Length: 148
Image: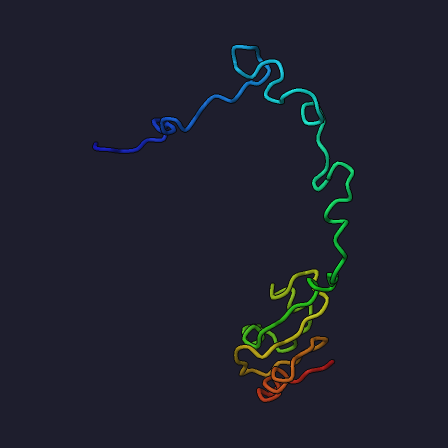
């Protein structure tokens, strides 16, 4: 057998592994006494760290800047459905439960809207699902309807 690799013969490359730095273990290690922390001060002490953004008591940057804009809480709760997604569904009556079971929308989704993307040839009835003007026209042209 020539050049076969076996799991029990694998080793890391030379220089890939090295001993962990052992601080505070005597003068000979080069990191004894103060263990690389220097002398005195907050950063030399155990537990001597503060929260991210803390500026020593000065008003931090994130509080000095003005508040601006807002984040909508409804953002992740609305979904868009393509016409081609509706075409692929095996049922003719489509509501939120059908979309959730088909995996087209997240279980936390509250509202869905059909957008004009792809083609639809079969008649579907939408119940409790909104549709854009173009999508509405395409669904009705295929013989479907939209019940609000």
